Image (cartoon, rainbow, N blue to C red):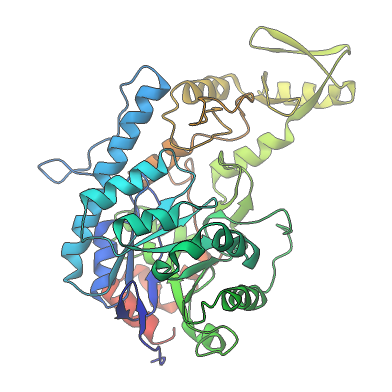
Length: 458
């Protein structure tokens, strides 16, 4: 057993192991509460979580509104109801042990309203709010209003410094910890900045030392850093524990807790996760958020990456032309052979992009893209795919057919959808499921069994 020192997190001494938030209907109150019951920090997702009918079945999130604004209101109501439901389940399941945190994507549509209404409707259930995918400047103010701790997710010392100087310094007493999410190892949306090379991973230790240095400048010596991304066996991180340069640290497990009996998608994802090889998780900029993200390279991701290669530049005048739903555009003549080849392969429909190019897709793909764009339910504050923006209704740019509807895909994958044809976020070390003897012969542990295993260091 590793000698993990208990730490005071969100007002209580706990084992510094965190069940990381994983988004739509995957980080549930069941998994969160079970983890907290072990004396750690459980996390449920506030991103369009499930609520249930009288028989305990998930209520389908179906949208009836004819306009985007109407569907946006429906989405917020679904999210609030689901978040409150999962918070209450987590509290009951935890048996009063550990801590319960709520994870929210800052750039989700209506994030501030959703977070506040969940905290209001689930009083005394939530001890901390974790936020990433954006710069959550208002997070400290929300924490102060509802007397909960807050945990920003950052990927660099620079990002935390900007957040603290502008906002967090006013509410230092409720800063429960800082989640360092490694841009090259973590799953989901990643904080690869303009200063980072997505193809050149940096040493996490050096980035953590830089983060702690900035935190020390602000007097935050005893605020823990929660290390997220790439954590599998704690024995591989022993040098990070009780390390004077890093100060107090906790460890977050995101992808690894998917394969537990309490997780609703464990059985559905099992074969895919166990089959992964190194490199099967791709870091791309395909997400409609505009952020980099890491997902399993299934048929959906492969198709989107191939779609990026079927682009031709628009020019003012040329003999090479394409019809984009009734609008004729001129294309750079150097693409003549490419366009002929793509068309012969069945990619015979050109769609405009926001970057003065057209992308070639099949007619069926084009119909599906248009359908999904027209049925946007405003799940993001700003969406490249549909051009929705919650501030004024539109980003002012052409909807981008090179990306996808993230709400549709995440709802599908969480509720029985095909693991090849839907978005499947995962950390870059998910391939270790197939290598770790703990999972031999298809073994799926309970949260209790996984927690105990992690404490051994392996």
